[in-house]
Image 1 (cartoon, rainbow, N blue to C red):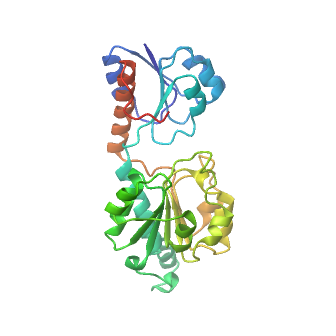
Image 2: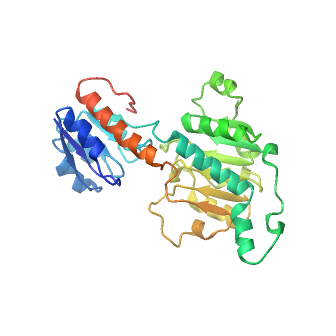
Length: 315
């Protein structure tokens, strides 16, 4: 059986090669992302591992006997899941490789924004000694954290920020009330979450239902003193509406790891603002996370090609 890696950004794929070829399968690795480039390389694949390539319906339709497509990561928005389902192809992901890292990143952004560290550091470099540039500053234990989504990552964010004394609420239509209750998290409507949160942290997947979930209307409901953090997917927040809200000081600041178009251009407005912490879709990263991601993706391929049900099936 043939396994194809469409694209990857890691130093090597020794882990995948060892596991997949060790199980008796062939592995071919490429660096192709466009549909027209993908079709000839995945046409006869039994399994496909992809990172950022655009696995469209045309690509999937060209597959002659593929059993599975797996994403290096959590979000599968670069894969046409409906087309895969129609053709009987599993779509899988690796949902648990970077939970600690992404939650740490989101919390770090909240702490830095909440203490206005970028503002204070910039003021000091300009010769401003003191705390005047950070006025007003609220005690974190007096703040409410709102979570958009309540899966693995936001649950870990909740536990970490509760250690700072924060009250935590969440909006997630699919969350189990008993899980939220066990973790002392209140499940509320999105409207309530927007109006009551001092920090709003986005952790839901990007789907047709969550695209631009937070736009101009939603941003209008937020407190002028609130901070917005996004370590999920760029398309969940309407970027131009966010830029406008920040420029008009309708929210206090933002922590952004993901953008609607990536890689982001150096002159992007969000990269020019003192009250924005922007990083390059790197919240997931640690050396441990990379190793876990590559290993778990390969193990899932071997598992499915041996005739077993997927460990983590999206479709």
